[in-house]
Image 1 (cartoon, rainbow, N blue to C red):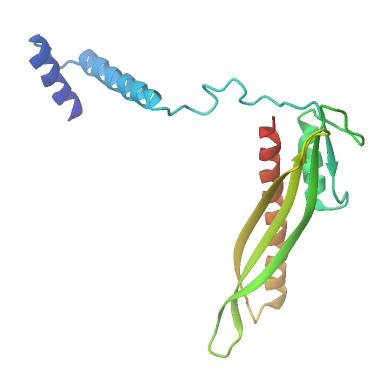
Image 2 (image 1 turned 90 degrees about the horizontal axis):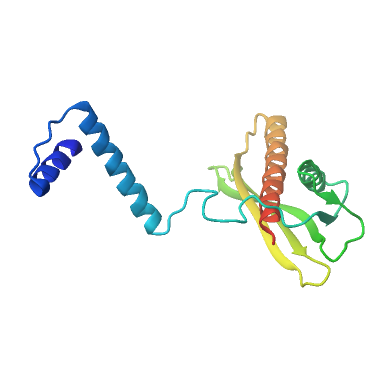
Length: 187
């Protein structure tokens, strides 16, 4: 046990004979945990939210979103950004962040076929290109892409197509989450 070896170490260094009662064990455990946390902190590891003054701080008061207003991606991002109190504007000021959304492109590729050369498994991929910029800066080009696998159920065609639609909706939601996280990191 670790506390026994620590007890022996303390006894060897100090010459003091400590009785291993519950208080001593608690003190030794607390001491070991403190030393471990200090050594982790000393090597550069920081817990989330500590050591960064800008953590959780939103740097823009307004944003202009350019994209297809009817797309699910636009609507999700509009709702998320509006929910945190950032004003969405049509005409940008000097301190307005501009988010330009490209179209989400889906592609479907066959991954495996059976002995009758029928498709058995597909790989569904999505890719979205988007840009962040301010009125006086160059656009920062970013990508968001996901890949999902789905099985072709030949006896259940409707279920297979419904599963594909659900996966596309899931990938759009994940893309929106990815863009939203990148939006929060913009300075």
